Image (cartoon, rainbow, N blue to C red; front, top):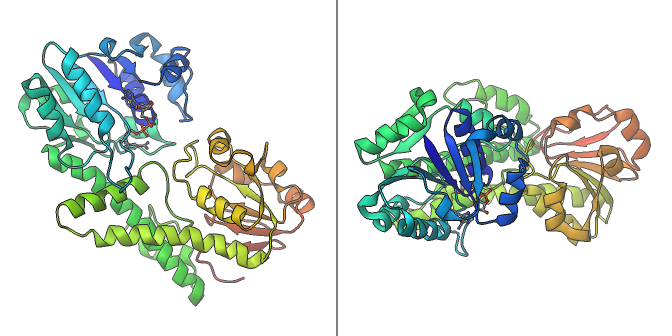
Length: 417
Ligand SMILES: NC(=O)c1ccc[n+]([C@@H]2O[C@H](COP(=O)([O-])OP(=O)(O)OC[C@H]3O[C@@H](n4cnc5c(N)ncnc54)[C@H](O)[C@@H]3O)[C@@H](O)[C@H]2O)c1
């Protein structure tokens, strides 16, 4: 099939390149000309493992365009941003604008697939724009950045909201090779599923963090408690790692948006509000733990800036709040991240030092603060660290490191040694 992808960011690129791998012909469109030029050179403007290789492999089936008029196919995926507006609602402006533009240029009936995370009722609004000249389908995305290609090719489920058999048949053809994983449902339920999934995962993390804080006060060990509760298959082990909490491009904005959807419909989303509250406090608590230890300014090596490993994405990363807090208390920051330094520079500018590797960050530091659990940090050579650090102190925001006993070590929810 010929498929267009409007919006070539994390979701659009993954969707389109993987659909090309499944055999479809893909036209990518983006209103960022620079991005399209980079993509035409077969470069990927984001860091996502495996994506570049798949792009090169399938390049003969892939085209990149800047003009939306050249991006019309029978099936058009909308992979556009839905950032929070000033009061926390999802801003669906770019989706509406692109739909209006498309409605002006399409001649015969198309299928519009909404992949962006959108409030319940958005597809209905889009339907009104196209009238009977389009099937409008909700197909929310569940990929994890860092594992996006794997997740697309090996989905737990593909949720598709449709309101007619023609749309259902077309979507079965789009996902022909993965069709056993499709769950068809009505459009509003598909839109709601995405928010419910993200909110549930966010509150699982906030829950374990709250228990971790109590462990720290009582002398229990959150790692043991995790195994104790996660072994119950009604609960499960995933999303039960205590730490500095969640961030990224989805959980923060989607939980806020869900609260707003609740407000509009007269339903207070109390649990989701609590999950956000715990998450904000988790960052503060960790920052204060560092401040209370040093009392006064210190030179700190930060390892990990991205909101999670295997991505360069810095959107709402816990590192932003933690570093800004430490800077406001006159700490000196030397930071290293394997992939996110470029994006970090746009946030912190000249305010911090960007280290070229782990040891450049650790050199002459008064302590190591780990914020993202990149695999690379498992292999820190502690003999070198011992020699080049001013003080052998570690604050591990992800309970990830296993330093030798002569290092002073503070994790999250762990008993004092
Ligand atoms: N990133 C994730 O892990 C993830 C996972 C699931 C769902 N989502 C959802 O998918 C959607 C897209 O997220 P993303 O992370 O890919 O965003 P992104 O910012 O990485 O990509 C969006 C792209 O759309 C382009 N764009 C913006 N306005 C445009 C317009 N008018 N015309 C054409 N292109 C335009 C931007 O230049 C950008 O390249 C959001 O609704 C998000 O909530 C994201």
